[in-house]
Length: 572
Ligand code: ATP
Ligand code: MG
Image (cartoon, rainbow, N blue to C red; front, side, top):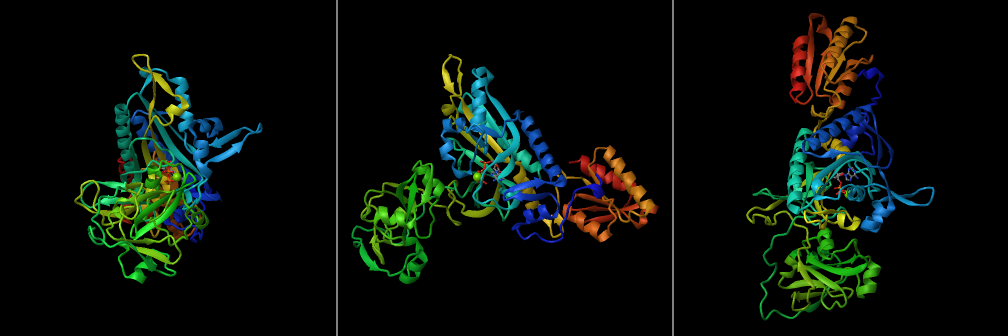
């Protein structure tokens, strides 16, 4: 490709709206432009990378035995009514009407559609298992689109769905997909980690893993064991048992008593006012689970894990109750809520909070708390369960030896064992060997293709710009004639350009009449892995060869440059 003719609008200025490196670089290197919040145009350079990522994903999916097909983004609402997700999916679902006033959605994911196809096309165990995938545009009206293509409202996803006659058979494909994903992310040049995860809006009964590209700007927190290979999303990480906080419970523990605590509503204020450890407070929060109030009690130094709580109460929606609702349902003011004496509401106590021997909690009365509160004596929890976020330093729930450390990650892929969640609702059944009808068992497997671009850049950049891994680089080689008015330089550069192209190497030639400094800055910014500068010594057959990643620059003969390039491009 010739740069002179290319739409490659690089920017010197750092765009103000971009908060993170990858977003800034995608704008500055002329890969994308924003059309509206969370909606992007891929310019030629960005689109080339997108297609290269797609190609790697496609190759590995096909190698793993999956078949590619393509669904429509537009889906009839009836399918979403059948699975209940028309109501459950919430405002992220883009809904629209056709001219006949019929409801449609723009697919955020395709479980409904594919399960319907399989229901229609597969009826016998003889046709199973099957694994189908597509690479397609998805729509999610995200609450907070941000970080460029990382969290967009329209984005490209690879989604695959597998269909089985047994959980064992699903397990085989799940493992194949796990391996395929590991191959994909390695080939994309990502430093990644598979982690245990929560299944979220996709749901399902079985295990699921997220593939996280490790990066400080990642929106997910990952708990990793210092000793074994346990790694889990904070949403999912199990809390190991902790030793009791405060005093050991005794038979003659004093009765609870009222404490006057005017204006102290937060744990920090209470810690300061009473001089106690945060761990002896029984922090009490009120949630609405599908509209019904539930009370969650965790230690003052812990936070409620809403994903765990939501799963525990089997709710579709879970949100913190507002002050008015709390006052109306519990008759108590926010900041002074406590589990003692609460009636007509479910009380769920975290395992470690239940071990607080002598706690302090709200008195359900303005400006008062209770001290010497004993769980089980002064109030009876409906449930004691793990409903908190793990914290750094917690014992590992897997090996018990190591402690948990936190890292940040970008979720690039997610694989799920769905079971019969969708097939049972859509009626996707098959006849087994005994002619008996059974629900098909499913798995599903997503990769955020466009999000991967941001993740790759986030992990591969320096102050000069992007450093593309060869596997996804928009071009392998950047040929730069320093002075396009110099006929000899131009002729040599053009000749190299044509020779490389003829061998299937992706080459960009900077044939612009620009100052060398501008050309080199742009070249670093767009991050093409190899650069050949054809300059002053071109007449002697000498060019400059530069590796973007290491910055290593050598003067070599044109033939050597050619050989180096062929080796590096073909070798990957
Ligand atoms: P997140 O927790 O980041 O919202 P998710 O759990 O909703 O992700 P899935 O439904 O599993 O995501 O979708 C599969 C993949 O699609 C994700 O692993 C991610 O890489 C990508 N993805 C999801 N939402 C977006 C988005 N808004 N923009 C870009 N990519 C996305
Ligand atoms: Mg999401």
